[in-house]
Amino acid sequence: MVDAPLAGRVDRKSGGRLEYYGVARNGTKLVNIVVIVQYTRRTADCEYDAGTGKKVGVVTAYCKGMTKCPNWINE
Figure 1 (spheres, one colour):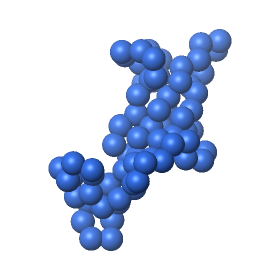
Figure 2 (cartoon, rainbow, N blue to C red; figure 1 turned 90 degrees about the horizontal axis):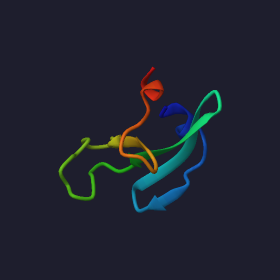
Figure 3 (cartoon, helix red, strand yellow; figure 1 turned 135 degrees about the horizontal axis):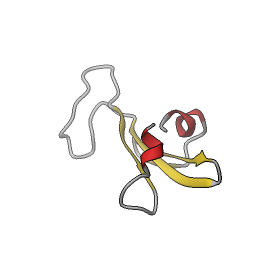
Figure 4 (spheres, helix red, strand yellow; figure 1 turned 180 degrees about the vertical axis):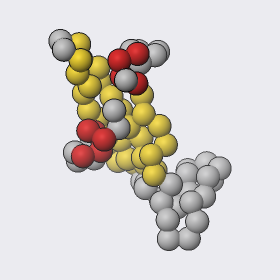
């Protein structure tokens, strides 16, 4: 679920916070996916620190427009 959006370009950027958008498909069913990446050493709230010379990386991924991703997303 995360690999496909990350293979594309950054769709939205705000400082070190990057958002990648993608679509997951299961037959005729389509789900919009959003992947949030923190491409800095620390998160904006300074709660997480990856250490000198490192980046935090993927923070979360979710299905846009729904409260829970369909089960087939995790298969």
